Length: 134
Length: 134
Length: 134
Length: 134
Image 1 (cartoon, rainbow over the protein chains, first blue to last red):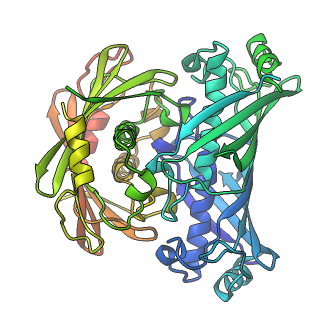
Image 2 (image 1 turned 30 degrees about the horizontal axis):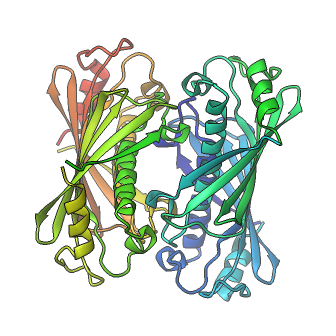
Image 3 (image 1 turned 60 degrees about the horizontal axis):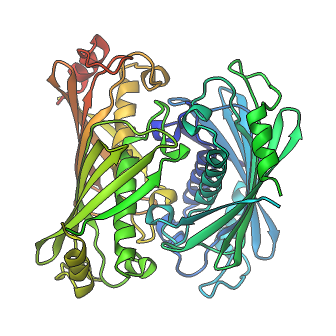
């Protein structure tokens, strides 16, 4: 069992006029956890996300909301990546606050090269999946 | 057939370091289209979203990405709402640029009262669904 | 007199937990007006902002707030650019809602080349300033 | 000497199509540091920012940029608040990355009551200023 956890304080700009975190910002939190997990295994984020060489755009995302998040609250995000096909991987996210489920989410990524053609997942991604998957 | 369409120019702050619109910002575009459709049938947005009285938080969202969007491009969002249960509705979004599909998305909303208890959809929402659904 | 005006409806994600537009999002609105003014004189935004060739990063910004903006309100932004030095220009913004001042802002930009060295403002920028300045 | 420091990793959604942090997001980082400093002295952020009771809207902000910030970089924000008048305070921010100045910023806040009338700074704000000012 080697899931990765990411903890974050909710900031004011993430809330909306209803006083809770704006729905799409919860996906932003999940992507932050994904970035932190890549850095955790030694991947250089600046290079990884620069749009040169291999890239891993999101082709699908979904999210379920159970409880609202408010400014100043701590959210804990557990994350587990899985390979889907030769060139795809999926990341599952589970969000909690004070040990209560806030929501869960999923992002599906495809590996593409500089010509935007599908490419098999490279060793650094396979190593990240191996190390972090549940 | 009475779907609602919303058109928007992609702005620089919506792009990310890979040079395309950040994935979660596409859901923001969809929510903008939802807001525009509510205003179109005469709903006052400030009251609708103030977190007082009835509210319609999103309990589920999903999105599929087919093509990236870039700064300065025009995106057209077609939107159709449907009632799901007594207290739920769903909005489907289809995004195009230059007549080519960019992606599609879905948001599912539950109607709750000030005590955060489920409440039947009120006439203003039923009227909006009636008027805009495909 | 040839100032440029940009009109926009305030969207829900721009508001914060206090029910009004989050302060830094007002600068985002100003930048949108700047982008629209560039497109107005025929500048291709995708190329202009791609980080290749000449770029115009902001070296200073300031903003004064007089009245809050709320979801659904229309904001009108009047904009006027001025050359400052050989390689600098400044854009002044005045924001109104229902003919009442909401705030005013300023962004100062420096023209740099691909090596991040200062470069004189090129004809397309000088033409934009000529055409839009008050 | 009791300035407050806040450290943060730059996230992908904060960058723009030029590959660096979008200018207005640097002010968001500063506001995060402000929030963290309030929490540091025991202020409850949810109550502080809920738009009920006393509020501290920003009436002026300015920022100078010296170097760009990139995805994955650590930014350190030093912050110092000062009382300006009976009902105003100002916060100065200095941002560094790897001990090099990235930029500096200022936010000016006015204390208002629920009727949006100016109100003297209350003890909790005076205590925060006392404790954190340089």
